Each structure stands twice: as structure tokens, then as C-alpha cells.
Length: 90
Image (cartoon, rainbow, N blue to C red; front, side, top):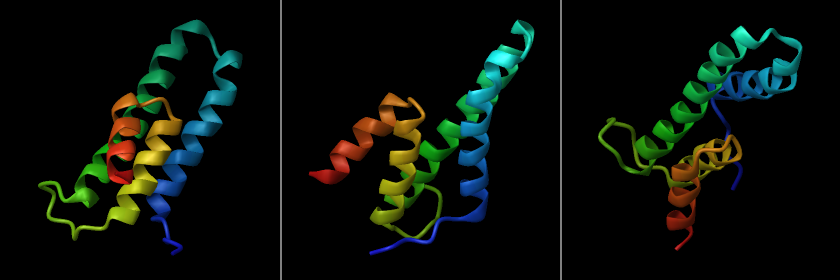
């Protein structure tokens, strides 16, 4: 079943990928700032996955959306999201 992703999520994820490709062109003092923003995006995806999995956020449980958000966060390097994704598959 196809899930329509939220526009905010799509923009955040696209921005993270865009930043990754441009970090080498920036001065070294800007790397920390950019890495922090990317980390916040990835952790936000993990948080949305937890909320849709049935966490304390008040969102209706939707395991398909949780899988999508965990997958994006896992691709961004968040190990906990990878583990959550594996647990959803069981």
C-alpha cells in the first residue's frame, strides 16, 4: 500500500541529502553547524516513527508510516531507527 508522505518530511529529508553533498565545499567551521542540522532532521524522523508506532504523541497508530520514517532515519545513519525498523518487521 502506498503511503503519501507529508510535505514537511519530504522537504526535510531532501534538505539533508542536499546538505550532505555540499559539506565539502563549506569552510570547516560550518561543518559542525550543518552536521547538527542533519542530525536534528534524522532524529526528527525517528521521533515521528515512534509517534506513529503508538508512542505518547497522540497520533493515530500507523505502522506503515512508522516504517517509512524509520527507514529514512536509518538511511541517514540513525542506528536506533534501524533497530526499530527491524523490530517492526518481526
